Image (cartoon, rainbow, N blue to C red):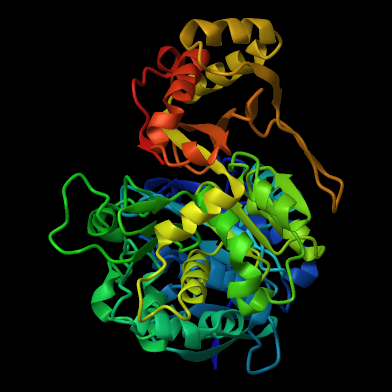
Length: 582
């Protein structure tokens, strides 16, 4: 058993932003500054109650991005110094964000202990590398992100911190090989266990889905499949699940080797950044050489987001969660007893609302942030939920889950084709169009303006709030832009009262609601590491069956024009076009 000592290191407060449920995200060059990561980790330990630290079991892993290996060693040594009893690390430091949640909730160590929390090292869908992004967040014993009460305390401690403790002489742990390493310090034993990154997560997936029916689908010569991990941590699970368990061809996996810089790409699963997958599915600018697969999917850097594609067909995230909810009871064994309820984030289209009403389900509209879903799930009020930012999940964990969403769609395809694998397949496009025919279509798009000057972004939002005080002025502007657009009948800043804990979340997005059910929503996103991201959401509901087959960009063109003129987007930001359209 290796002995170690505890050192106290003098430090000074850092400039840290207030961490949300997505944690602290900055450029790598910020995190590698002396004491920067150490201060955040110590502030987190200080913010937690003593029983969640001393004698506790913590998970420390992430998406494998640049600086993760060094961060794991630092956090492990600080955990030892703060009285943590044991640290669990995914092999090679890799665990997807949903897998971390699963490990916290499901894994029982050889000594009978369960994890009480986790440091997750990820900047989600943002790029990685020496000049790119790094991030860290803390998840609680329910497997979900730390609530605002904890993140507020963490922030307060970062502004006053004067010292941190670390077992500096603790040897680095070999994270490439599974096994347990035992140490002892002033407070007694301290163990580090490196374990297989995929086994606990796969076990959970097999308890949710019918892997036998999925195997029949993926082994059918008529069904072709492609999954793109974008060189993120999803690749650590792809071969085990899709090839070894479900029988897909290894050639159906794209970019499934996790890389510190995500292969130089942007690990965000959307039509702009998942270029190779988009091209292979026949949605690129030129026709692919080979016939596109029937089904394609991608996940982001930490594998909590997903994109679903059919042959030459894109499924919007808003439609995706609605279609999963509409088919879950029939297609997914985990939900066979029925759904407790469903929920979506406010900017997500109202497609899920229509399903909930049709199926007589409890329905919740929450602010952006997975903690709001987690509260509903912990209270037994919600089974399936989703965000339009490519996040979909269920109450099997307390994070969104990219691979779960892929398996959910494969399960729906398997169910729809259970007696038809010898005939013409029911395709992704067939399923979506049938859904529109039943529930109506929510034409929907999102414009992202990334790395906008933060001051300019705030000015634009303040202008939109001020404009809401006079709907007559708003409608006069709209009429001057497009006479064929309905009038605004309500405008506000979204506010949410949590039905579980009674907390109130204000200023969650600026809404313009139209007489015909259309919506324009403007929101500042906190997921970037510098500047500001303005997100503009545009939605139009169409229930006339003769009008649900239009191209989305054509159907939404009038509302887009109104949104850009109403917000004075170019005037405030200097941008003539968004960075990303989804």
